[in-house]
Image 1 (cartoon, helix red, strand yellow):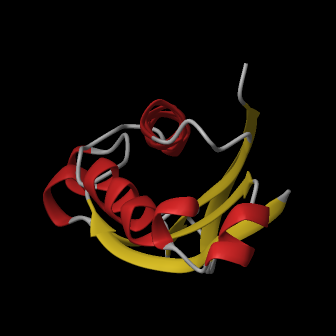
Image 2 (cartoon, helix red, strand yellow; image 1 turned 180 degrees about the vertical axis):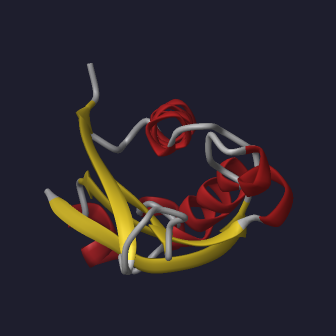
Length: 119
């Protein structure tokens, strides 16, 4: 087995429960870690024998563009889509962070993290 990580994927999106968040938007950071078998690709040196991280990034960006009230909801959509589209992935750890959230206080980010295994 092996691990592929996409760290600090930066995007601008419109998630949140407040009406203003849907209009103004905010900066987000996504960190994705997947478990998959990397043995074949380590020998073949062929992209088709591994998980293409370009596709992982594309899924994250497309799902982040769909408004959700909760970060948990958008994270669940990302995880479900990755499992659906890439059968070789056995585990996903995903963190979604809202940068400078509109809460009372000096908070750099609010982050939710979910870990799921393929059934």
